[in-house]
Length: 140
View (cartoon, rainbow, N blue to C red):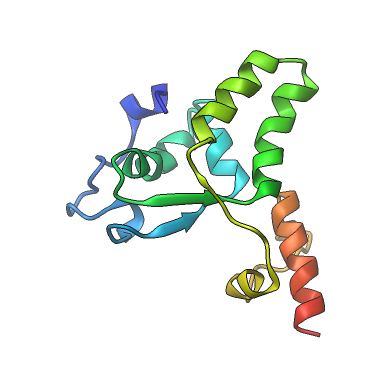
C-alpha cells in the first residue's frame, strides 16, 4: 500500500535491530484486525506509522497477513455507506491479497484470554465483540 505514513514511519522497515515488524519471524502469519488496516489505508497521521512496517513486511513477502471476513466487511462498509464505490474498490484491491481467516471455534480459542468487553475495554470492533461472545459460550 502506498501511503503518506511510509514517509513518517517511526521505525525503519527492518526495525531498529534488523528484525521484522514487532519482532515477528520470517514467514509468520499475522491476523490483522480492522483498525490497523483502516489507519494505513486512510493515512491516519498518528496511528498509521505504528502499523506501516507490518504491511511493508507483507509486501516484501516476509510475513503473511490474514483478515477475517468480518474485518473485511468492516473495512469496506465505510466507503460503501458513503457511496464511495471507487474508494471501496481501492481498499478491496489493497487488502485483496491477504488470506481470509474463518472465525472457527478452534481459532477463537487462540484469542483467549481476550480483554473483556467492559466500559474500560469496549472491544472497539465487531470482530472483537464477536470473539468475546464466542469465548463466553466456548468457555462456559
